[in-house]
Amino acid sequence: MLRCYELQTTLEAVARFCDERRVGDVGSLGFRRSSELARLLPCLEPLVYDGILIPGKTRFLDMGCADGRVNVFLSWLVRRSVGVEMDDWILDDHAELKRELEAELSRRGLPPIPGNIRLFEGDSTDDALHDKIESDTGLRFEDFDLFYTYLTMQEEFAALIARKARSGAVFAVYGLERIQPRLPGFDLLTPVRALNGILALYRKE
Image (cartoon, rainbow, N blue to C red):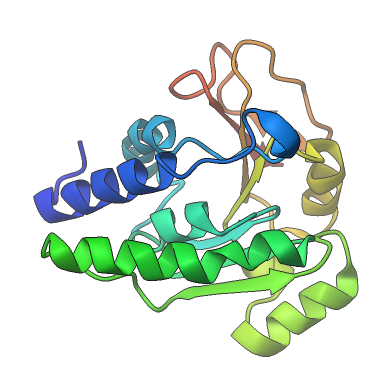
């Protein structure tokens, strides 16, 4: 567990709230799957312990953020939480999710969502979009420390990170377990098994 009881309680509440509103497992939106935050939560302590996630300092980029739930989840821990989503109709769900979550946190007397989240519509591999992100946030691609995706376009994203990110940056891929492909230009940090059986970690060489 994380040291701060209030933080742990808040993250547990956020995970429960968002996981109850998951979409895409079945039906017409089967292609649209959401990270299960309850499975992501136990990964945070080893990320902090290993210096991959430095509270208040890490700059985080979700390269396919959907409704931004992972950005919200990590916002209490990172300095800046930036997300990119290609489909505007999916990104539109963020405002409602955030509004309902804010109400739930307030009802429980828990800290509000930090104001360090910024979401963008577009293609994460588009250099022009990253120019916009830099213009709006002051962060260049190479300023980000931790990159994330839900098992989507991992090879394309890895190629971009290998080309543009700083050495030592970490790419986290949600949805991998025992079979974790090697990515050119990266060291696999979870060679035996993904964190909590779900999160593979790659460090740029």
